Length: 187
Image (tube, rainbow, N blue to C red; front, top):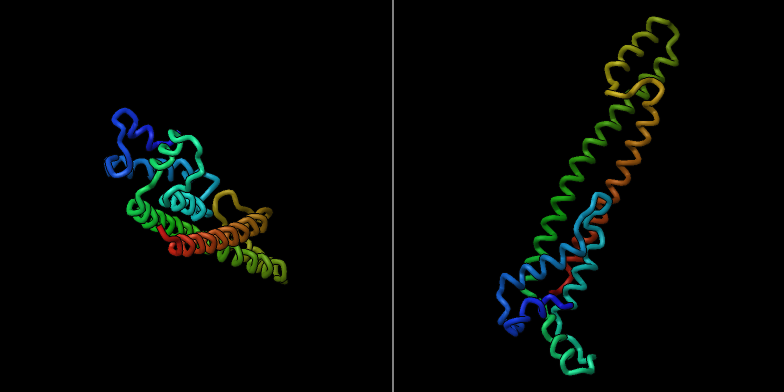
């Protein structure tokens, strides 16, 4: 059922008679229902959702045969001014997500750098001739280990961090593309 029918139902309100705040709530509710971020998703492909909302700002075509259904179809128009504000909010929110992801990416890169240093120390330890030099490098490595890391698992942890860096860089790239798409949309 169309939300506009529900909003205007008992009083028979249509389009401009429906309070502005109700129009805002309607668009926000529809948008939220479609794109609410879950722990496994981001704003990627949000532009497709905005395209659907833009479509609803356009007058609907005469495709309904029954007069009653036809009159209801005219009630579904979304206010384009509100939609433009939504675009700005989405872009701002996506930029915030990019910012947070960049911060996390910087952390990941610092961990990769630390673990690469561990690798170099490990190589020097393996190539050391004297036992005292080997012990020196081993003790130095202990200082760089973080909780849960040790001589046996740090290379695997390094691979996981490098993988995470790649994934986050790709996410930032996709989010920037989404912003470009959204900026190109016309409400």
